[in-house]
Length: 439
Image 1 (cartoon, one colour):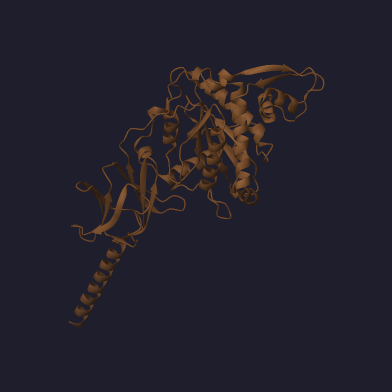
Image 2 (image 1 turned 45 degrees about the vertical axis):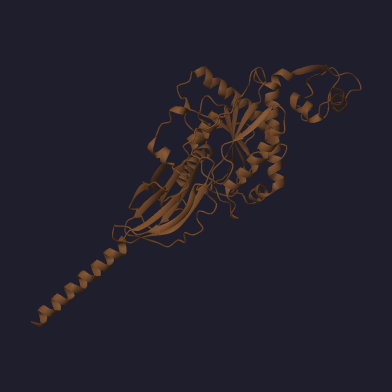
């Protein structure tokens, strides 16, 4: 009798222990909620202890998104999450009909196109549930020319990484996404100051833009050229210097190019992407364009890459002195000539410090801008303002200098040097110079 009681007692203890373990295992936690507003969409990221088990539905009058997290607890304060976002009025909890579930309600400003998807752990992030609220309005297109007006040359500027994807992180905690955006904004400002040029950005703030979407934005803006700005990284802190990359549609050759390709793939995992996950091929990439168009784009890319390198090497050390090749997604659109500029190694302590400073960022942006101007002065699109301005030619006579010629033709010495690819102020008698016409 006593032995039977002991056995029943032990069985009940084991069953209770198993029950408690089961409950403990089943309970998930919402450990963080991050809101990333962007011009076209808002991304909400829920950080969870374990893989999310969820369901959701929308309500109207007023517009709401309701998410049930099964067997989950929320540990995040909700009252200030929507403070800086125009699409979400308020986060709040509500009672769920599902036992043990946490119900979160997002009160929305209006109806949005909705994408909800989980993301597995990647990099510094654990399990995540991502909600994207996309505006339904059609996007405005940039028109290159109106009537007989000579158009601007449109330069697309892509600041690498952003939002969920910090890019590389330096030893002093510098995020690549912040460096790239700072340099991109400076480059935009410099290009917009030049008559005959206009710059457009693929992102203007700290938010994530899918790699395919960056190309789409460039195409919608009808860019003549796309420049993607990055800060390099490697597994060791020794490598340093800038480099310029163009597309390679065949096998990746160098160790550094393989490293860059893997880093781009990791960035896509960090940033996540409902669109990328659901659509493994993007029809908008125009992959079926004629080989002649591909060759023309590659020729332009190599030409501008060389001009940018010629300017960058005056302000920073070059890791590679010639254009490099890699099969990077942001460069793959065959109808858009493009380069990727690695402005330095954020994994190198000295360069990380430099890349954080406004002065060095400005030098890099100025060098890239000068390279762009040099290329398009010599290769202006036929319907552009720059083509209508054109060049005159001058044969250098005895006693003439660059400064004298600049004053005579009402242009700057820098413009003369850029138009003629000069590295010094020295000219020789009998030399024929291209003289850009004054604006």
